[in-house]
Length: 345
Image (tube, rainbow, N blue to C red; front, top):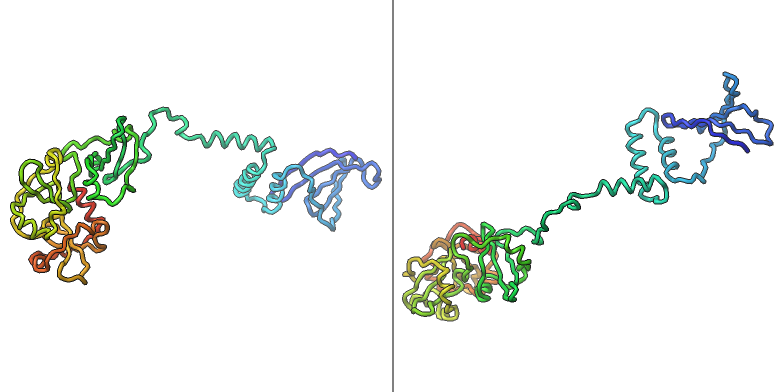
């Protein structure tokens, strides 16, 4: 059998194939005849004649299932289903089909070329970056806790203030007055820690949380309560302290060193037997009243979700004492209180 493909033209949605098809043993075909098929009719013509003879093809010419490349089948099927003149859609869709086939087929030359293109296109700027590597696992925000160890092995925990400057938490007792566990502490290398400078203004150490402790000078007999803003106020008598914190006030007493004491700023002494700013209080005389109040600017602000892990620091205050204080129309959540106290450090 002799087959010489002369012309293959894709026109609109049909294909036109011209072949010199002359079986050796079939006298019904002339050697010079040309068969033209559009997938529906078969037309024979003498290449030396201008006259076309058309015969109806009752059965669809079966598609050659032995076509060596699936991509060709996909393209043929697409062109057969697409109407003529839709050149924009044809180009986009056939390209998508091609890409899909190239993904599935790795043995063809076109597939290799496609993969080479992908490698070139997906190269990122990071591959060509030659600058220093960012030493932190992420960019930390105010309120985050950072931990590292110096070569000697001593561990330090730092709090980032509102300006993302470091404040050191010097003692475990101070840490426990603010936090219930260490889950929020981020361990970072020293190179990361140094990207956040030490605090340039104000206290460089985090002190005890306001209202949680009563501190005493290690040398002099003065006793202080802790207020928001790293302030402390002296309380001149045990009777006054007891009226504010109750009979078990001494359980909150902590003797601090000179360095810790110097981190605070001393303000006016406490003179009235009323809860001071920063304290958490509740009504001692009404057990069914579970509301917790935060003392802010001399007023009682209700904490809507309670004291949470600060529950042990809530002071049971006589109802008569609470009635002497105005109740604010403002309400807060515990997270609001925490964030406000941190910002005031």
